Length: 305
Image (cartoon, rainbow, N blue to C red):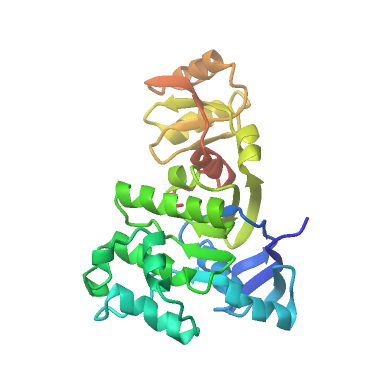
């Protein structure tokens, strides 16, 4: 299968520390790839390398099937928004976009206005200083900047971080429209896994600089399904009690509940083991697992996504 982006053992070292190690990642054309991992896991490092903003220590990657010098020329087809949009706060939103257009030799009439419309910025926003924009408006302007030059791949680092619920929905719709109407591929990292699960086609989980899993939405559905949730107020003691009856596929989620992913029909035995250990049992029930549940199960219950 041909990929629009493929990495081969991509590695970035800072001294003796591996910020990203042996990353083998695959993005298909017209797909949205959700990159998941806690702060410091290596997400931004990977994004900077594939965008040409940082040089890998070892390994390689291909863009649109090209490597080496040809691949470097293909970087013009990659739009990037990493960390915060690089805006001139004293210039208007229109002027920020126009400057980049001029720098790239893009001069079609109405091009900037169409960009602003694409990302949901209103005509009256064009003349406002970028420094007066709300966070959501700045993020939309950042996406518009990344779209200049008609890229085939967008690399977006936490584009919905800090947005209110309405802003999150709007950005999600923009990205879905770019994929569905223009066939643009998107790599997006996000802490908001529930929103990411509504958008992404493929996921990659990063933990301590390593890509520990890569899967499609269909594969996620087959891997999650039901789990047992236990509320006891004594998470670690509950895990120990479950281990006493041979249950090891269990972890504590961010709300302090214990999530069990094996022997789901044995809730009575689980309850008995917990009570026998002298642990107050408040609640035990079945629940459909989510992307967040799966992420936590793969990373040992670390909730700092």
